[in-house]
Length: 314
Length: 314
Image 1 (spheres, each protein chain N blue to C red):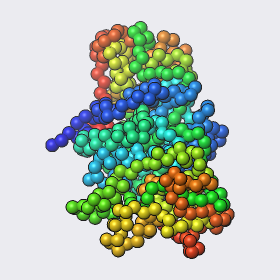
Image 2: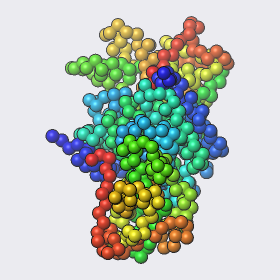
Image 3: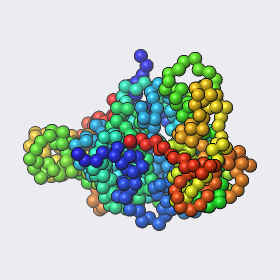
Image 4: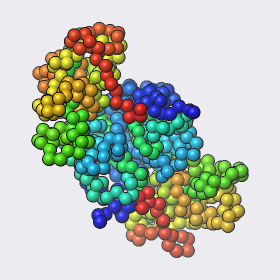
């Protein structure tokens, strides 16, 4: 029996496969391993990223198609925002079942179009093909004034997050429960999952003040552990920003909202290390870089916090 | 009963959906409707294209994975070559079944890596996810010295093609027949289908001398009809370049090779209109632009040649 892709998992597979690729083009600043690739072209720094939504993996057919289109654009823009950049051009691939209702695809395109207006960039090309399951792929080119890697953490720097965390996971749980007669706080949490808003509004703050930055897509602890390679990082768990909706959701169900905030994915907030006090710009102070070495995250009492990574291929 | 995507078909759907997208970015020279999109960024003209290979639509699992990886890169490079450009950077999406053998994905990457070396550009990023069927998507950025559209045909200009046509369709037929103990000419035709070579070697000739240019992916007549919008074009069917392998294949089976050459897809040769005699550069003269209006293709006796488009969504 040979190895399966699930034996390596998503991150192991990427690491394994990129060994086959040897780049020696001097214009490439960074290729794999960050939110975007960086290249220098003429006087520009260009950012490249690509993300995919697959039916039954990332979304269900019963979701509103406008939300699916919106989310496809937002998850890509989030990567550009995390690098302090500005999106310029997108290319889309639609792989569609032949018997899909035309109105569903129109809905997806309406959502895409709304997101293009909101984030202010252009879709310039694409490709359509048939497939058994709906699969949407967007690649995006952006530009940045400087290069901000995700792992440029320095000892003594403070760590900040934007917005609130954990809402998306709670929204997903409500969605999957099939509950009807939703209360307003439940509708709001669902909205956070279905129609996340990329923090492009904070991109210029990142560009001016970030030492390291990435977006939170897999979950706070999981993503922080990617940033904090070979560092020990302290997290002020009491500071983790929670929405009123998440607190209400958890209090009604006897759950701890901190767990949602630390481990839930798809919030698409920004995680930034800086020497500057970013609370002035609406960020929340959530941690600091304690020391070199260790590759671990501890709470305010020194207890290790373990990241549980979501892995698409496991 | 609402409309299905198959009611519009691939080309109708693209036309329908692009109406939802309104671009007013002045840097965009052309967005949808050509082999690549064109933008002007600083002093550069950048080309953008994306192509997808879906299991059971574009390839079967039993094909050698190295060939699948090679073809994914080649079909994209072919679009850049058709615009007289040079590929720079690629982004890849792998959507994989969890139980796929690791060795199959490694094979795909070996093929990709060989193609990157051959065409001399870099893969700088990507994305991996799970899906029920294998789906590979590559988006590609290139650069060009000038802008060459596919439909810039002028009355009196001659039309040229590179290489030979129809081989890929014959190769596909042999593959699907499941024939064993293949003769050398059959192996060669299969190779043309599985591992097409993009004509990047002709890109600088296109850049210097083409008035209009595109690659032949859907078939000679089908693609010529896209170039010849609102023109009447004469095709010298006797000149259509045929390989010895295709002639042998057809003679053994009582078929007409011209039909394969006119209607077969996936040859990835170039179709170019020019005022210059491109036979000096290995192209074959296959037609001329007769007059404005008509939107039709005729043979040397004035008989209309009808394109039969392959449509993924019909």
